[in-house]
Image (cartoon, rainbow, N blue to C red; front, side, top):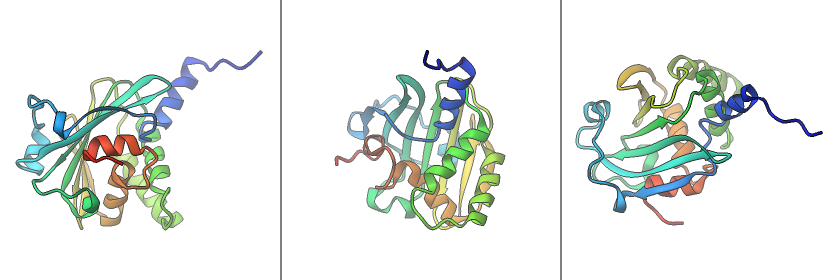
Length: 194
């Protein structure tokens, strides 16, 4: 008889994939974004006047994991996302373990070679400090400060900053890089076609 995963095993699998944008179902891109989406206060304070560029939903095994929204400054160019101030807002649909979110984030960042084991260990430790366990409705917002850092807010409260420009570029590349593991979600966030 085949092994049937327990509830605990299924939750761990979801947590491990929390940062992985795969099997994402698209929500409307910028052109169809509802005008009623309010700019969260942390985004307004970090990136005044930010525009909603696009949004998408991450699903795994048919279950919603989180909704993602990309907020950008006027004049944003998708091909230069690494040099642009922006904010990525994730609203979680279920309980996930912060430690596993951090581990999966590092795995996704390592899709592009060039991260030394020491650098990866430093980044993982820093992410474990800023990514808490989340429950349905919790919101983690990452703000890209090009050439400087990534700042992280949990439910609008500053949780921490990782002051490493390479980390920041690679972290937001999980969703925005052409090498992302989920090009459909990238297209939805950036409002571009393939």
